[in-house]
Structures are given as structure tokens and as C-alpha cells.
Image (cartoon, rainbow, N blue to C red; front, top):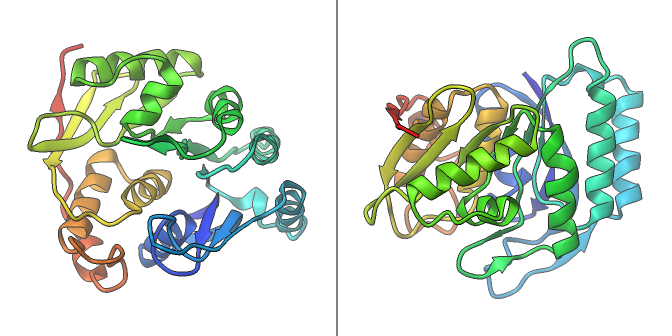
Length: 271
């Protein structure tokens, strides 16, 4: 597959594009990377250098990719970190243009906007633009529990509430499939809750400490590459298990293990 990913890019570590692209490349996919912001590393480290890419520069990059004939051949588009409403507008315009093609790409929106316990880490107007403009264009959306609550306006403190919030989010779009990461399963478990046209499904995994950043970025990338939720969770669980307490996800070092990991079985939920 050829995928276009618009998100953040870091010099050191595996988050945003720097998590999604290497993971997909190891699986044999081609990735067109368009950064919305460049950072030295994840902001959780003591020192970080940040350089936002101007929205018009991002638009020019996408235009050049299109002029070279590469954009129209994409099988999927994944959007992640968006630092401003202007960046959202550029991404939305690109997606709308691609949707006019005879064989439009699959659109996956990872609404990278915040997490517990600190809340939003992008400006509120950017988060609002993601919800109002990118979400309606998505075929698949992959919020974490906080992002789901923020976009739906519904509590996600229990699995039942998370399902109701995902269903509410689903009705805002045109039949979007919602994969809720960090679903509140139990004290010792988390996982992915999938709410789509069929009965909701839960893919449970053990809740672990010492997990490096970038897990959600890899999950969204795998889903964008047509991995089933169960397959994506299985691969990601193997990657996480081998990366505990490491400074970054060990994407390359553990490639032989996580790329061949079995899928996680789903539990069907009663709405």
C-alpha cells in the first residue's frame, strides 16, 4: 500500500510520523510523510526544540507531491497531530480533493489533541477544527479515551459510557468506524473498543506500566494499512511488551517479533 500521513515528526524517538512510518515500512508499505510540526523529541523529555511547519508550506509540500503524480495513487490517508485550524484546513482540502477520485483513499483520522490527566495539548481552536472538519471526512477515527470524551461531550469513565460516547461520535460522521484506544476495561486491563456498523467489539490487553510514547500512533498507522483491529492490537501488544521501560518503542529491534504476532481475539459486547 501507499499511504499519506500528515502529523508531527521527531528527530529522536518514535512518535507521530517517526512511529508510523518505520512501522509501516517494516511491513512493506510505502509512506509519504508530510510534517505539520518538527520536534527534536517528544515534549515529555526535559528539553525539546519545536519548529511548527507553516500551513502554507505544508500545502505547498502536498501540492508538489500531487504534481509529481504520487498523491492520487495513495490507498489511504492518515491525519494525526494538527497544531492549528489552518493546518486542519489544508488537510481537509486535500482529503476533499482526493475523495473526488474514482477510487478514493481510505481516510483515517487520529485526533491527536490530548490525554489524561492534563487534557488538551493543542490549542482549543485546533481541536475544535479537527472535530468539526476532519471527523466528518473520516472512514475510521482512533481517539483515546480523553479525546473521545472531548469530541463527543460524553463521559468515558466506564466501558458502557465509552460505547455511548463512541456511538454519539459515530452519528456526527457518515458511518465512521470508531476505534477507542485506552478503553476503560478494568483496573488491570485496557484495550481497544470498536464501534461500527456491527455489534461493538472489545480487544482486551493487560494494562502495563513503563509503556513508551507512540503506541497510539502505531495503532492508527496499522489500521490505516488495512490491518484489522485484532491484528493491530496483537502486533502492538507484542511491541509494547518488548519495549517496557525503554526510552522509545523498539520498532526496529523487535521487528521479527511484533510484525508476526498473532491477532488478539475480540469479545462481542451487548450495547
